[in-house]
Amino acid sequence: AQSVTQLDSHVSVSEGTPVLLRCNYSSSYSPSLFWYVQHPNKGLQLLLKYTSAATLVKGINGFEAEFKKSETSFHLTKPSAHMSDAAEYFCVVSEGNNDMRFGAGTRLTVKP
Amino acid sequence: EAQVTQNPRYLITVTGKKLTVTCSQNMNHEYMSWYRQDPGLGLRQIYYSMNVEVTDKGDVPEGYKVSRKEKRNFPLILESPSPNQTSLYFCASSPRPGTSVYEQYFGPGTRLTVT
Image 1: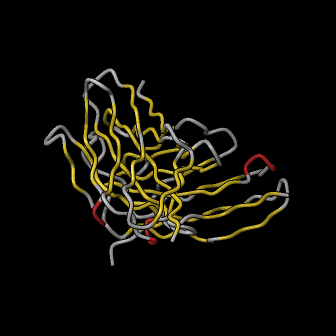
Image 2: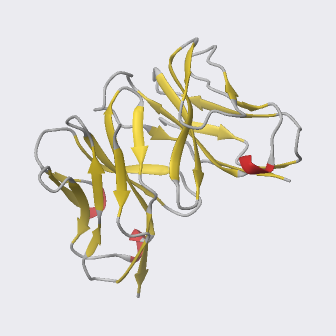
């Protein structure tokens, strides 16, 4: 069965500096991978998804992620953090059908 | 507007008092699912439904029931809630089951407290 590990439970950056949220996955097949964002008291919103096309995936709000099969990683990056990026981020892996496995989440804090 | 709605958004109840959390989507999605979110555990799937009258257990189904009588609605039923079911619950829907390409669309969440 697939699984996902988010390597940091909390990341703190200053506004205008780069963001890196790390995600490693385990899968027996060619998985699909997603990043979702959850702002306080809100539902989950899809940031981006990888589905075996281009390995560098661009999402909304300037985020992107690179699928690295050799490293089983799907890290989320953004060149310059904005205050509105403060939220919880979830990495998700799916091998198909209904089965989506969520990471434990990474809380991103952005300092002025 | 395409959306998944849940009601109520907040609920405080007592142990053993049956409750239902409703979920409705207006996107004609076939697949619907319920998750619970607990600190440090991410989201864990409770039940899912591939289509009308087709439901199945997720990872943490104990203490929950669901039904899918109509395509748009997927209520979550707690017949005898216990304090360990205090959590944040999310309903989600997806256009088509059987594929990993389609992302899930999430409702706003229901925060349940069982005392």
